[in-house]
Image: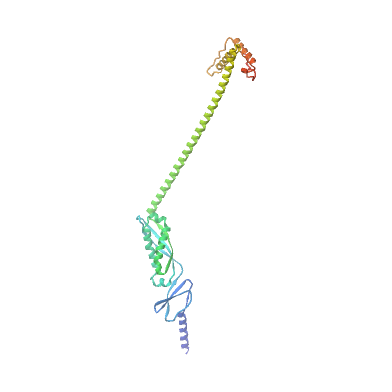
Amino acid sequence: MDAVIIFFAVMALVLAFSAIKVVPQGRQFTVERFGRFTRSLQPGIAFLIPFVDRVGRRMSMMETVLDVPRQDVITKDNAVVSVDAVVFVQVIDAAKAAYEVENLILAIQNLCMTNIRTVVGSMDLDDVLSNRDSINARLLHVIDAATDAWGAKVLRVEIKDLTPPADLTAAMARQMKAERERRAQILEAEGDKQAAILRAEGAKQSAILEAEGRREAAFRDAEAREREAEAEAKATDAVSQAIAKGDVNAIRYFLGLKYVEAFGELATSNQQRTVIIPADLSGLAGLVEGLRALNDQAGGPLGGGAGRTSVPPTRP
């Protein structure tokens, strides 16, 4: 009797474990009835018909990161690059992921590898190295469309590494160095050009200012000569009027002025080491006295009234 009770207790436990299922969060279970898919179990507790229903596949509904193995790819310009990538995948339909493909992870990895060869092989090496975003977008579009039938959603495809061969890397380094040297030479030439332009502008402005200074000086010299000529003309006119009136002192004044100017130039000449003094100094003294008398009658120098002309006394 006890054995019968124990048997029924064990059978009850077996039925309970086969009929009651607890699905964890982030997962879904498929239910098969006599080997045929019937439904999917959502997270939580679920009940099955013992000996009729059973759990088929336990599928993870969380986002999964898949590593795509490194592979060598030949680009459009026949350069060989090593490429690897990562793929972010999430199952959105447990039934399709379980029954439409034998091994979902392996299928996605191989699909990524083939499409990487297709996309990278259609581009030049320079475009491959500089357009990773474009490669990622093209891979995502193609792979996501292909995995839709498997109940999976490809969220992102990222190229991890693009490695050209060592000889291409060295050639690219030399090319970059040459390009930077070329730019440096261009900048240096531009600097020399600007410096030459600035020096030329400075010389031009200096020449302009110097010419303006010479013009101003010439203008003022001409003005001074003009005033001197006017004064000389006035003096000559005054003497001429005095001579016309028969004034002997005027003639003496005119001749004495020229005599004094000539004697002064002779005395101040740089080439003259010996000054010859006239023997008849009494005539010179008389001439000076005549000039003084003429100046006193006119009321100043040439009648200008500005004061008397001071003539130093001559020594015999």
